[in-house]
Length: 145
Image 1 (cartoon, helix red, strand yellow):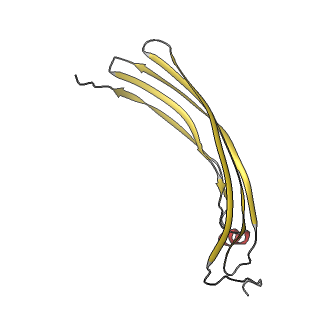
Image 2 (image 1 turned 90 degrees about the vertical axis):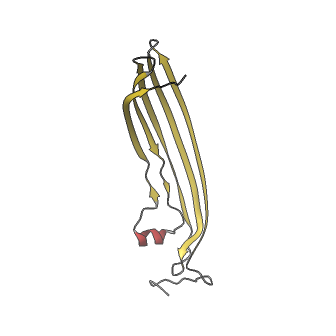
């Protein structure tokens, strides 16, 4: 008996789990580019991302912990935007600038039972994280005949 609770380890068991996770992701996007003049181009876009997850375990625990079922579900969604422009100074030199957003989907940290997450003091899920990217510069094209 450990921690005032009984557990029945399987033979040669240190940690075991029986899990299932269903995960669905989809995205829609549009990106448009317009030539304002023969040398100047602008671009814009939008993206929508969505995910859903659902799962659980019959049990997930260390040998000294009781075999407990757990469930987790959640999801995330985000709209991302981008805008850019480029200008051809000459036939071989172009200036450009772009701004864009992105993100990393959150999720569940599966495989450990409810008691184990409290023991290791880690969250049972991870958050969605956003990113922003900005870039400007010039490009030179050299063509060999």
